[in-house]
Length: 253
View 1: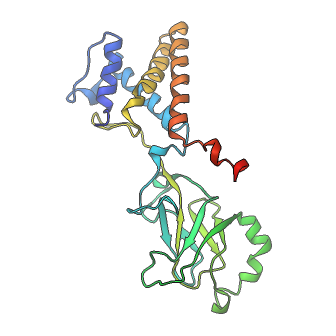
View 2 (view 1 turned 45 degrees about the horizontal axis):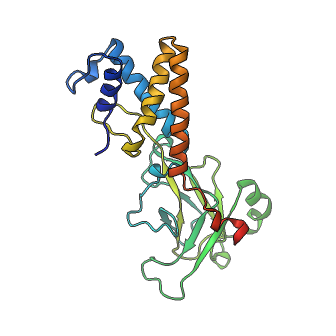
View 3 (view 1 turned 60 degrees about the horizontal axis):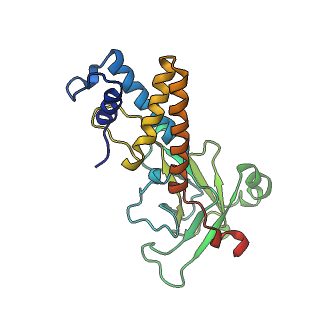
């Protein structure tokens, strides 16, 4: 079971030999207890914001995801170029935290009514400027001339990075798969839980001790805590950021 904000705060308070909190008084904590809450949250944010593509932030919005294609997909509509990356998002604060723009994949597999032979291909990322310079003029007739619709080959990022476009404009329904990671949120209520595995709680606690000792102007203790944090964070990245094994590196393909 994931560790809660209350449990993390009380673990730090016990280390400091201070009175622990309860679910009843957690929200009104002041003094050393309030500061303990603050440094726990700051430490948590330091970790989850350190890497926008942490494995534990990978979204699963599409339900039954397929890691071969991506972890989320959007279905195109014939005659429509632009699509929201996250249809359920109403503002930038609820958008994805990160998107892998170099790995968009187009397929008709899974599309209702589609049959063999299926279309499946990578989409090449191009910037909005590249599209404007090399493709826009030829595609200006798309909106009026369906003869220029076709199977998309390119993916375009909108200026605000909240939408993607395809080129050419699709002639039918396709699934556009991609990899996305959620935007982490701060801990707030006493029952809020951390998003990463509990085995890495010591990393968070080391970072919290660092912030606490910095506040208390205890440079030696802060330095010890910082070194513990750096070592723990390196272990997290080694385990959770999926490094490419040497035997499948590009040198061996």
